[in-house]
Length: 71
Image (cartoon, rainbow, N blue to C red; front, side, top):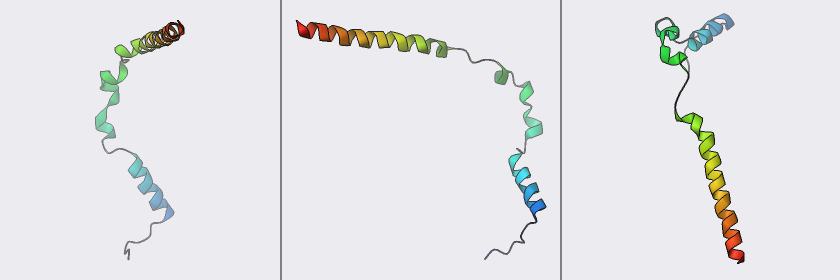
């Protein structure tokens, strides 16, 4: 059996707000973290190009296979 007192609505609200706010909000300082600001660079820009090239290769293999099977 639970022996805790039941909280008033105001106490429940304060408890919920306290749970939602991170403890180290003041110490994290996201505005001082340059990696959080810079845009991601790298290979993700090549992904659409790679997908298109692979699609063309697959389609050409299928088409050439159908053409060669007919002869």
